Length: 482
Ligand SMILES: Cc1cc2nc3c(=O)[nH]c(=O)nc-3n(C[C@H](O)[C@H](O)[C@H](O)COP(=O)(O)OP(=O)(O)OC[C@H]3O[C@@H](n4cnc5c(N)ncnc54)[C@H](O)[C@@H]3O)c2cc1C
Image 1 (tube, rainbow, N blue to C red):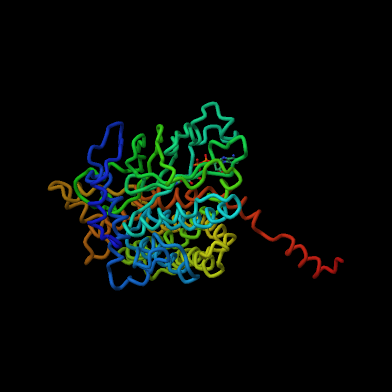
Image 2 (image 1 turned 60 degrees about the horizontal axis):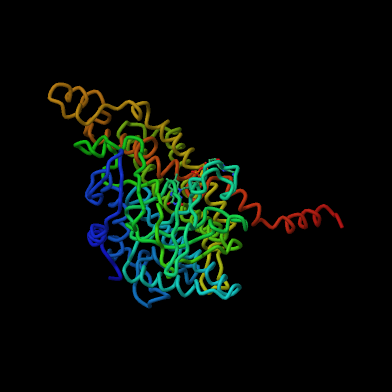
């Protein structure tokens, strides 16, 4: 099925049996659990929008591998336009869900592995590229969502993988068999790990020859034997299990992150894309990082659009809309949002064709994009807190609003404009709270800093990518230094 819709996607997950734990207990039917449903709704949006004629050009594309019409989330870039559309698509889905919709690692990792496997085969005479293409054809034809597991738990961060007191603190190969390999370890902060059909697994950083066993990349089904998904907590997450929708702010959509344990997981050779070739291990996270950092210029702009809309509406409901400093702050939020979006677009426009035959983003600009994403949402959050007022942290509950005893006081004393129901104000306040301090603050605030690596990783990538020689020569030329 080349293009699933949201319901078909949910059904496809129901056929899988991942081992999932939440609050210390096993979830026997995670697909239909109230903690999980909003996160699946967010992914389902990427499937439903592909069927909306209005977004057909953005959400779907003709595959370079199968020749069929596929969801853009599984596409290998064939042009600059593909990379521009990726950012626009990410902004659109961010606007529709106001959360991390999780699916972008499929294209961000696939486009990196496409290049690295091709280069490995050319230099080493291996056959990884054909293996990878075979897998990607299946991903595209079946419309799979493939997550990515790169971030090892890392133990003592000052030590290399092989130096750790416990060898499993970085995922590594523990057995080599005729049919495949067995791996052990764990990956932290795994987005959508039980919402995806497959997971790409790759090293978190460059490896040295002593770390050979840690230099491994592959794809595995989400419900592989030995894979254990331990569901991470979001602030205020148990509100999802309460009745009512107001206090959640965004009742329909959320992200999903887990600690993903690989307890002796078998991987057949046909799904292995790197095996102990240490010199190529760092290239996968390096290229993925830059590519994923660009995507944030789209998705975080989309989420910021919802924040701006909420703040503007609330200002109107409170009779603040015409006050100059409020307008000024809202316009600043627009400027910050369009700045990160511009970075995402520029990263695409300055991309180019690679020796592997696909296109790739401009890595330098991708890193600049993410550094802005790691900072600007926090400035927007400060402005939103300012405009919203103290109720952002002190609002009473939906139960109070609906209480026969105190409901009338809530209705009366939280009123803004007389014609606007108090519930509408409460819904906006809780939406802003959800994004800045609640369930979706993980996707908007924490992920903006740490997703695709922390800011220090972007700076070290930039240091490698910047052509300082050219800049020094420019200065010498102007200063008159021979
Ligand atoms: C919401 C969210 C979703 C995510 N989704 C995914 C996903 O789907 N897949 C995935 O693979 N990863 C994912 N990540 C993980 C993300 O890439 C990591 O959080 C990030 O790389 C930072 O790693 P860490 O969390 O282990 O923090 P740490 O590595 O502990 O970093 C903490 C601080 O220590 C610094 N530091 C750490 N080690 C060193 C060192 N050796 N030298 C100097 N400074 C150091 C860092 O720069 C940072 O300032 C996600 C993260 C978040 C927050």
